[in-house]
Length: 192
Image (cartoon, rainbow, N blue to C red; front, side, top):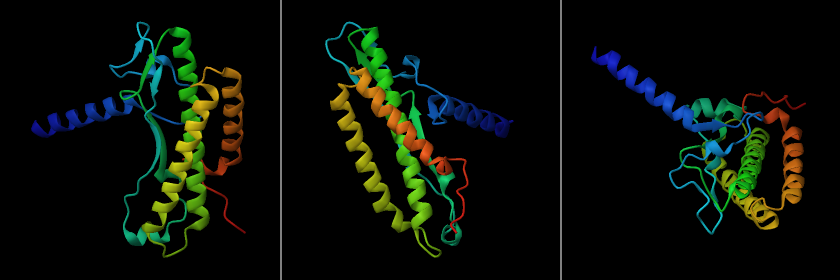
């Protein structure tokens, strides 16, 4: 009975955790309801702010030998949005809407950098490489992503300049399409 109860608790925790995290799939668009942090507030404030808990991560659980002989790491690089940590503070509903649009841009931009990381690993990893070659690559892409998000934030006034945001977003989606072999579930074509 104790084992059954333990398994049930683990299952409930997994369901709860997975409901709080959105993995990028190219189909789902963020909604205001995805910003579930207790600090989310629409109206009654004089500032606008957004906390977008997005990011690409690299996680491997394999032996050094497995790592050395693995070439495709697409499934090991993820991009997710954490609903429980996401918050929007907006003066009104219209402002909240453009902040959600900016968050969607950020989520898609993060997928672009996840794909760039997958491609770079695929192109640069050699047989017998060890995991240490990944950290500088990851750090460079993370730094570049943060800079792009900061620049977009300034250029679009956190999404308020909707035409500018749409232009930036369209380019990101085109860049994602160009890296279609490097989606999380994809298997890149072998080099000739």
